[in-house]
Each structure stands twice: as C-alpha cells, then as structure tokens.
Length: 118
Length: 118
DNA sequence: CTACGAGCTGCCATCGATGTGAGGTCCCGA
DNA sequence: TCGGGACCTCACATCGATGGCAGCTCGTAG
Image (cartoon, rainbow over all chains, first blue to last red; front, side, top):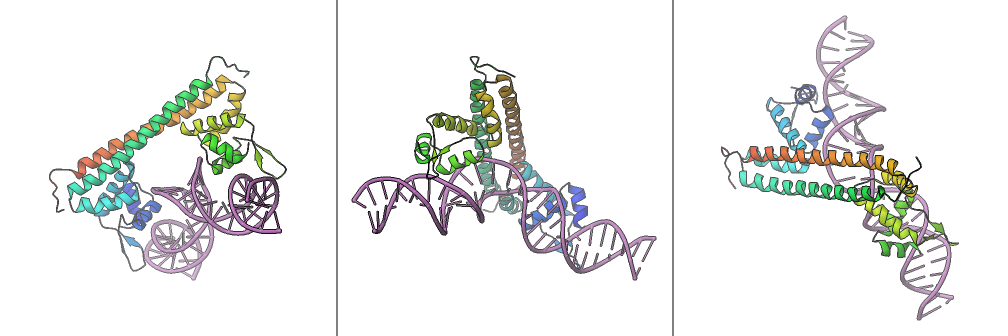
C-alpha cells in the first residue's frame, strides 16, 4: 500500500510516517516513481511504534527496542524498558514535587493577611 | 548590588537573571556604565521567581502572577494558580497514563512465549 | 599604563515530534 | 491534453529556560 493508505489505516499522519522512516523505525520499498510502498505488516509495525510513543518512549528508544522485540530477546527488551520506566517514574516524581511547590505558592498567594481590590 | 552578587546570593546564573529581566520578571536600574544595579528587594524577588519555576510555572505565568501578588489580589492570583494546578495535574495524569501504556509494552515484550538469544 | 575581571549585547544551540509550505514529479480520469 | 490529487524532498517553525561564545566597554588593582 502507499503512504496515504497506511496513514488512513493507522491514524498516523503522512508526515509522521516519513518521520518514522527517517528515524529508522519503519522501512519502505519504493515503486519506480519513487513512492513508498508498504507491506501489510507495516500496519502492525506502525501500531507498535505509536504504542511506544504513547508510552512516552522516544524515537531513539523505539529504534533500539524494535529489533529486540523482533529478535524476541526478552532480557534485553526488559532492561531497556526498565530504564525507561525509571525515567518516567522520575519525571512523575518531579512533577508531583512541582505540585507540592505549587501548593506552597498557592498558600503564599492566599495568605489571609493579604487583601484584594478586584 | 550588581548582577554577579545577585547571582551569588540567589543561586540563579547571571544568564538567568538577564533572562528574567527580558521576560519582565525582574527590573534593574543602570549605573552610568550601563551595568544593572539591583535593590536589596531583588533577592527576595528572584527567590519568588525561582519558586515559581520550581513549581513548573512558565515565565509568562510568573510575569502575570507577580503583579497580582504585589497587588495582594488573592482571588485573581488564586484563579491563575488554579489553572496552572489543573495543567500540572493533567500532565501528571498524562504521564501516569503513559506509565500504564509502558507497562503494557513491557507485558508484550516479556510475553513468556517469546525467547531470547542473548 | 596595563592587564584583567566583570558586565554588556546579540546570537546560536538544545530537545523532539509534528505542522506546514514551496516546488517538483507522476499518474489517472475527463 | 489538461487538471488535480497523491506523492516526493528540503527546510523552517514550534516551545522555553538555559548554556555558551564573540566582541565590546569600563573600572580598578598592580
């Protein structure tokens, strides 16, 4: 199939599909006119790529992960994903901490000794 | 005091202090040589600015907030901060959701029917 | 007088997935 | 044959706080 159809079937924009290719996540043959031709399997691959993005993985990490999944190498995939999970946890913790700080700011701003004109 | 001293006393880099000024968060007089001169109050102001940043507020929001704090306008400050808190909550929720998706990817990757060569 | 340190402005880089637009090729239907 | 649509590549913009460099001025210590 061509890129427009793949986009329609996966929900990814045409732009994104080209980007995935540029990042080494997705490969395509070319027809004589230079247009990308995708095999059926590309639909599943794009779904997996998008799943990775929705899991906050970067294109770089997905590029590292996909070959491992294909090789069915559980320990290595697992190691990679564990690192990413820790990164995500750290980010969540950072934002949670930011929320604590924000609540402090709110406490300062709503100090009852302060008044308001408007 | 001059910018170097203010930086030393607040922990902000000289670069950041100039950025704060550029964003309208911090004002400074100039000496005849064109160098920034800060009043003592600048130390507290920078502390407040940094508190805002550490609470995940953007320079734009801090720029909106500071005048309200100075005007001691609790309701408006509160409204602004509530919006930011919601934004932060939404981000935390998004990342938490990403973690769920990541766990799904991990489940796929560690499917026991898969094997490993390395 | 000289050299150095501190300040100044202005500009580029970062990070990353995606949007967007220009300018060109190609294929198909009318 | 013409028009339009789908596709191509290339490239810039986005968002935001900060780092860092270049080239300059100025004030002061030696």
